[in-house]
Image (cartoon, rainbow, N blue to C red; front, side):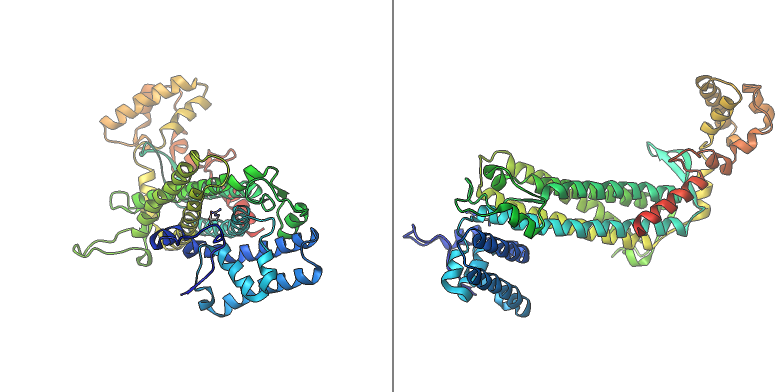
Length: 461
Ligand code: ARG
C-alpha cells in the first residue's frame, strides 16, 4: 500500500505512533462515503468559484479531476489502496496528484468537520430511499402471503392465550401496517438528514463568500444548517436513523417470533420451507427456523447500535470531537443488518405455508367465541357487563362438561339466560364470529379483502 501525505503535518516534528495511526484511521470503513464526498467536493469547488477563489477554468479543472477520481476508482480497485487517514484525505491526495496546486486549494473555507457531516448526510439520504424500497418489497411479500391464504383462520392471542379468531391475512396486514409506519418514519428522518452542513467549516463558519444556498441546491439539500457550531456537531440524524432501523428490526423480530411459535409442533399452524430451515447435527428429525431466529437475534444488535450512538454523543462538548468518527460503523452495520433482515424476512414469507385445517380447528377450540356470545346478549338488550358475567358462568359450566360453547345444548345455555334462543348457534359459528368484526380495522373477511386491495394499491402505486 502506498503512503499518502497527511493533511496536517506542518506543526508536527515527530512521527505518529504506528499503532495510534492505525487506530485513528477510518478509511477502512468510511470509504463507503467515497462517491458522496466526491460529489460534495465538486459542489464545494463550484462554491469556491462563486466566491472568486477559482476562475471558471480552474473550477472546471478541479471538478473534472474529481470526476476522474471517481472513474479511476471504478475501473481499478487498486486505485483505492492508498494508506489514507480517511476518505477525505484520500480524495484530496488523489486530487493533488491530478490537479497539482489547484488541488491544494480545494480545502479553502472547508474543514473535514463540515465535509464529513455533508458526505454522511448525502450518502444516508440515498440509503434511506433504498431502505424504503426494501420495506416496500417486504410489504409485497406480506400481501402475497395473505393472498395465498385468503380464507385461512387462526386463533388470535392476548397474553399468548387464545382470544378471538382472526384471518391469516389480517395477521399479515398487521405487519404491513408496522412497515408502513417505518416508511413514514424514515421519510420524516430524511427531512432532517437533508440539511447542508458545508460552509460551517471547522466550527465558526467560512470566511469566504461561498453561496451556501447554491451549494445546497446543487447537492439537492432542502436547507442550509443555520448554526455552524451545531452543523458540525449534530449527529441527531444518525441516532434518528438508527432508531428507525431499530423499530424496523423490532417489527421483524416480532414477526419472526410469531412464526417461530406458529411453526412449533405445539402450535403447528405454519410449516417453514426447507429453503429457510436448518437441521440438527445430532437429532435427525429436527427442522429449525434459523432464518427467523437470526432475524430476532440481530434486532438486539441494531438496538445496541442505537444505544451506542446515544452514549457516544451524550457527553461531548461542542463542537466536533473525534469520538464522532464512531458514528459510521454503527450506522453502516445498522443499515446493512436491517436491509439483510428485510430481505430474508421476505424470502421466509415466500416459503411459509399455512396448515389451514389445524389453524382453523385451533380457532374453534378454547372458547374463542365467548365474546361473541356476550355480544349476542348485548344485541338482545342485556347490558354488556351483565352479559360478560353470564357468559363467564356459561364458560365455567362448559369447561366442567368438557364442551365448547357451540356444543352446548340450548336448554343448558338458557339456564343461564332466557334471552338465548336457537339463533345463538349461528352467532357462535366461526363464520359469523369473523363476519361480525366488520367495522374499519376489523377481521371480517369483507373488511380484510378491502384492506388487502388498499395495501396492494399502495405498494403498486
Ligand atoms: N474521519 C473523521 C470522522 O469521521 C472526520 C475527520 C475530522 N477529523 C478531525 N480531526 N477534525 O469524523
